[in-house]
Image (tube, one colour):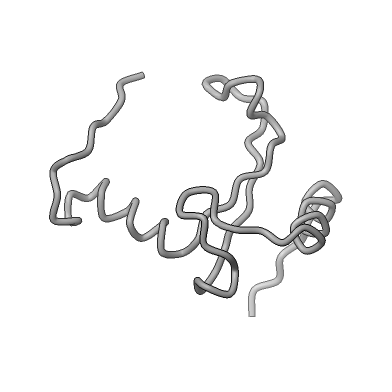
Length: 85
């Protein structure tokens, strides 16, 4: 079993998610409707807009898989656009 060590900021974000309820930021489904939801908050790094730093975002396992398939070109559609840097 893998042990995860959480920072205080992670603990605060998890407590907030549990108190408010949370859903996938991409598809809008709630935790009970999907297998897993991952939370994250982007750090202040080059390329991350200032207004996004520290804001929580959530993605479900189904959206992760959908994104993976789009990036691999195996989603059965070529109707996506890669935005250049």
